[in-house]
Length: 305
Ligand SMILES: C[S@@+](CC[C@H](N)C(=O)[O-])C[C@H]1O[C@@H](n2cnc3c(N)ncnc32)[C@H](O)[C@@H]1O
Image (cartoon, rainbow, N blue to C red; front, side, top):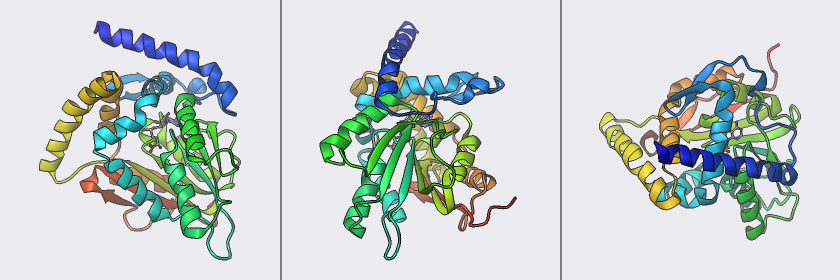
């Protein structure tokens, strides 16, 4: 218990030290959370029950704590499989200028360290010879964005107009104009958002009519015997790996708990439809027995009044 509270105060200190730096480094029209006006309902933070107004800062604490080790830990925890899922996600969207069309404006929400954004730019360049399609990487956490910006510089995506990094809350997307985005992506981010339906509504607002919403997230595993093994691995091994590799057990405990709390594939597909998107078929495709899934929706050309 003593270790837990020590960790919490150390992580909180890092967060608050980092915050003014982020504000200078990243343009933002958002305070980072839209919850200050919310009636203080309760929500979940992993398996804990917390006030809605506190969840965003607790999530921020987790991602500030894991930012530097985030990419390494993803490889370790998933045995590199997250790379295959991300490749598949981007290939299935095939972003880039189509013959006779315009370059795309893409918004990668909860884009963190840029994994999806870089792949989308590569796809545009390599498949469509398109160097004008651009991606805004939007994330509530400046520490994750800073890691992304470092990687973008190292890989040569920066300096250029092809990519930019912005502090934004998925629930509000304050600085993103309505009907301005061709493709909205969110990968392993939505489960961390306090009010998921608000984030879906904002996705619908910023997309142009005909624009595509695409979300990849952890989901429910089947068949049941496989799920039992997966749960055992998640709850016994991942927090331990977090402790050994990143020196941070609590953040990885939160990550596995937040996965468990996320709605089922069918429930989330319905939430996407409730936000006004059209979905094809059941609205999602499962990867690796449902360990992750991809949901897609299209903003209809004529929005019902
Ligand atoms: C697991 S990381 C995913 C990063 C990246 N998309 C990927 O696939 O590797 C989750 C990200 O969601 C961000 N996040 C959490 N809540 C958010 C919110 N309300 N708005 C925007 N980003 C948020 C975190 O800061 C973190 O960078």
